[in-house]
Length: 176
Image (tube, rainbow, N blue to C red; front, side, top):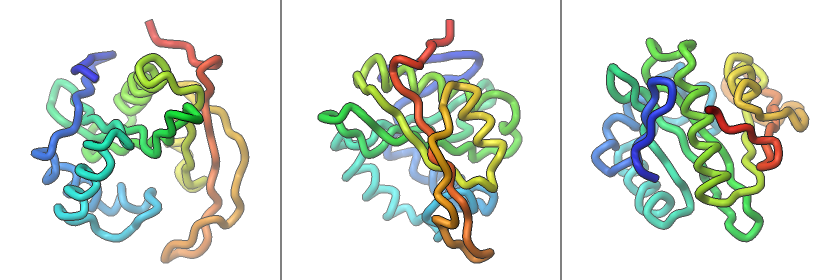
């Protein structure tokens, strides 16, 4: 995907040089608490992800930039070209950027990429029910709730319910 811009948000393909940014963002407590892997990420771990997932095409990952610079990452992982589906993921590492619509704009852009460029039929995600802001953001761009996996994840605070969501190509309405 080439560099694209929507509503003040630009997506650019991730590069190995972005490793320090990803590691810093990903290891912030307010980001990590909403991820399945809640241990710290090392530069080596991210570089392995980059080489085994991004370079091989199993993951399409982009850096989200706004007028102030890079603010997060958005991606489609577990890309299954036979079944035409992939899993959506996003996080904004810059807390000043949250709540301003940047995440929704980035999500809309990656959905367009997934449906138009990758020819996917279904894009899905899982999100902790304890993260209602994320759920609202996903619904804003067209994701629908499919169900709740009760007490599906366990963190240091106990069990967490997980909301499964998806959007189908036929439901997608590109932003104009």
